[in-house]
Amino acid sequence: MKKIVRGFFLPAFALFAVSPVIFLLAGTFMGNQEIIECISPVFMDGGGYAGWRLVPQYPTLGNVVELLLDSPEFFKMFWNSAKITVFILAGQLIFGMPAAWGMARYDFRGKKMIYTFYIVMMMMPFQVTMLSEYLVLDRLHLMDTSAAVILPGIFSTFSVFIMYRFFRGIPESIMDAARIDGAGELQIFVAVGIPLGSSGIISALVLSFLECYSMIEQPMTFLKTKSLWPLSLFLPEVSSSNAGFSMCASFAALLPAVFVFLIGQDYLEQGIAASGIK
Amino acid sequence: MTGRTKRNRAGWLFVLPSLTGVMVFYLIPFVDVCRRSFLQAVGGGFAGFGNYYQVLTNKAFRLAAGNTLRFVLICLPLLLGMSLGIALLLQGQKKYREIFKSAYLAPLAIPAASVVLLWQVLFDNQGLLNGLMHFFHKTGRDWMNEGTAFGVLVFSYIWKNLGYDVVLWLSGLLGIQESIYEAAKVDGAGAVKTFFYITLPNIRPVAFTIVILSFLNSFKVFREAYLVAGNYPQESIYLLQHVFNNWFSELSMDKMAAGSVLLCSVVAAFVLLLQRSWDRGDEDCND
Image 1 (cartoon, each protein chain N blue to C red):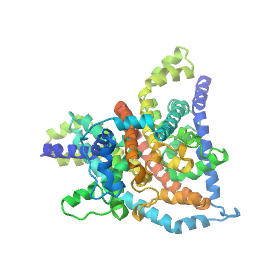
Image 2: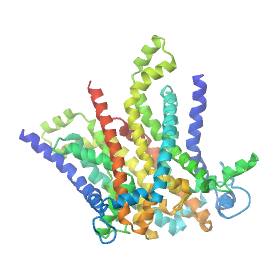
Image 3: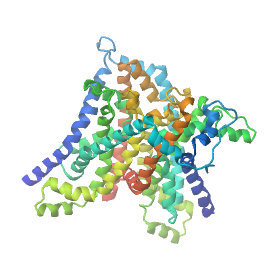
Image 4: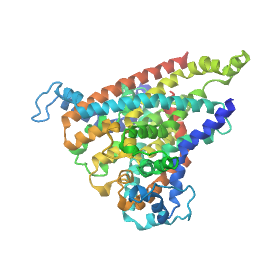
């Protein structure tokens, strides 16, 4: 009985979760003509209903290649996304990683308060911080520049929290041993903390990547100039005139995220689990 | 002793750069937002709770808050139940566990940008879903421009978050020692009894965490709503972020300020609850 339930529900839900991915991947290999054929009822007022093929009739990578090489518009937005993501992740390493280490391994006055504050910050939806962020960015004359999205993103406390959880797990005895050998605190951080906490650091990076790469609210509020927009913001603005192009673009946009997911999946799991149990 | 003090000063120095950034970009301006929430929009005179009154009686805000509440009340039980069910099935399934987990987590990796077109193809008036219904001789509908838009939003949310919650539940379930189950089996306890007397009590701390995390995540569902319907959605999926966006483009800073403070208090209250449960979990470990 249990076997039947398991044999049915687990694959059924797995299919439910994965089918959009399969759909999208199938689209990656379709030619322009085939895509337009499939979706013209939705975007171009053709008659009948949209259709789809799980296996493209004439599989080709032509569309993706064309998109990557010959369309400056896509290229620009792709690089905007890449720029935002890379700068935020780098910033989180530079600022967030030491902070996580400091809170996880040292006792100082006010630490508990700071930690609680970081957790509260991490949970705040964008609606709460939107006006605050705007006030600062406006004062610093950063509105409508990439920095308006990047700088607040760097100080998102979520990645600090994930790394904190992993740094906590390093045994104190290793640090003491390093101290006896005469290592300074910074040296301990670099030579002990970073290597031993590396899985936590990667977990935080993978989670942050997935978050930044499909960021919508922040660029929507702080970027007015369209040439600064990341892909995630541009793509929903599809009109019938560029449906084919957008379709391809949304397939291409998928690839980096899927790539990171496949490589970093174990870390992603560890990161999620770390946010549940202390 | 001095060595220890010096060491802890190092801890401060590690935290300081990040803390400075958080203060500059979030905390200090938020204090300013709190101040503004008590000031009049024009002239800047003291307004008392006037802005709060205005927000709470604002039609759009009430609609959005109501939708958000309805969304939470429907989605949370659904998501938690489904993910727990799947996690329980996976608990005894060693062979294919990893593969299934990957499948459930996959939606997390799909950027909103890529899904948006697919959703349109699926739920449009002439989309796949209606094509399918037509095939079975049923009349379709314009899913995203009627009350069903809410259903599409629920669907998107659950699709996206299922894997996250499954992994969280599993981390709790796999923490239960196998020997307890074996002992129960020897004593002749059935599957139902085992669930209520062993599994449930053991995952209670995790359960509380998952409930609150999922609740807080549901505030962030705007991304899905935007993905389903863009900037001007059907009334049933008009969410708080839409209201704030409108206020932002009207530059009604007074309303935004009061709204932020209100929402912040609600979220902060839940986070403190969450922290208490974590602390309790800690004590349990020390016992």
